[in-house]
Image (cartoon, rainbow, N blue to C red; front, side, top):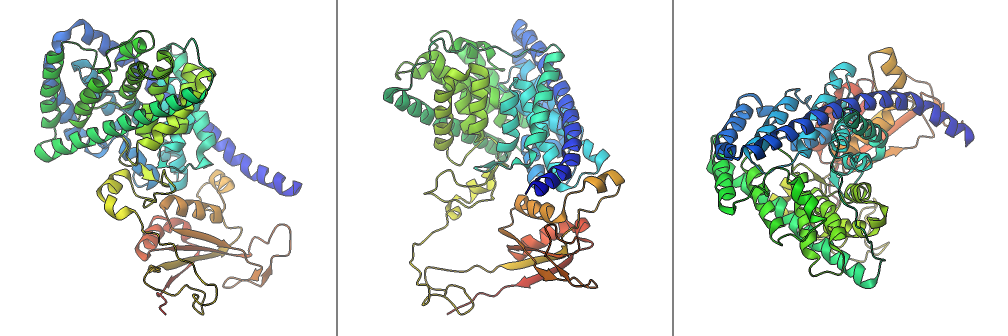
Length: 570
């Protein structure tokens, strides 16, 4: 066993060293990008508040932002959803122009008086800068996926000053209910380095008040935390769905893209004039701070939901997370009037729980709450974040987020779909599962399959098998790449999992040979490197063929065999 562990560590060391350097660079890029964003947002916010007449020009600012993206940014207009899609199905390197375009677009939104955040901008800047390393290192799909995840973590951590939450966010945001830890180390390094770079450049994050008194966990306190979390989750769901509905309406009714934010700008500007205050536009940091110190009007959260959904739905650029902080903190402040928990604690719980419910990231939001508001509040924050996650349903602010597994074990949904697809196909996503007792001898076909009947059906499946040497590694070009190349077995299995293949099996071979080889036996602690290896994939034929097309470069020395299966009937 000691020999095996030693061998694994030695094998892993070059890869860990490589990713330490790459993630360090990603962290530096993320830190510089977030520093530029934070500095520019501070300047445009202060200028707007000193020259409120500029809000009247919000329609002009919207048209300008929309025209710039229509003219120069069609490939990057999807924003965060593009990042998630590229992680799930890597295709093209994210254009470098995404960084300056989203920075300019966000600054225009805040300068003229739109209601938006900053996290989406930070993520896009960090990921687009990080993805340029793909051109240098010629990353394949699996490595590029980790690179982009590290960019997400670096951007999130550096813009909010929460390295632990940033680390987990990059892992957790991809799919509901499923986390892959293969990118944990790069995400951690990028998050820590990104946060430190931003601080070293002289940018500082807002310090929020910790709850002066955190009550002990009692039955009433536990019930209050769960009720608050459920309300946070429902509001998060309303925000996400309302934003998507606004976006759909603008796209359906207005065919020329630059006109969407222009008309939306007219509506937002009129709404600002009608309410007579600017507290619901921009980032709203002063109101968030006030939520921890004084009692606010109980409708503040609803006003921020409306302003932000209209701004982002119309096509203005910016993030959703800081408005979610605003919504959660002010909602928590309002709930302190009816729940048995102090206002500062509920404001902190809402701050992170509404975000966790809308982004479907309960672990990252819990860690963020602990980093921002202290460990003493951690239990209440965790309860609120989990409850919010459960009550927000299968909805979220990122349409490209996948469903890794259902939030509820008693309510199955079709896995692997994006939230946008799941929303459109909701009636078809729930598979009817009929409980039926199967008799071991009477109900089995002679080949081992259950007889088809009224209640049990076997779908048409295809089996794809790869045959290669157990010591084969992913083909690389340079000496360094060949030295650190992963084993082909693990690479293909992990790639198939990421691709959403239904079933992947690695068959253990005791004896055998490939074409042209002598007979090899598995009779040593470390098998012969030319011992045959069989990797089996099971799914629909068209999906398996798409997987083959994406990995044709890695399969040049691999024998590929495809079996079309027939349904067995009684």
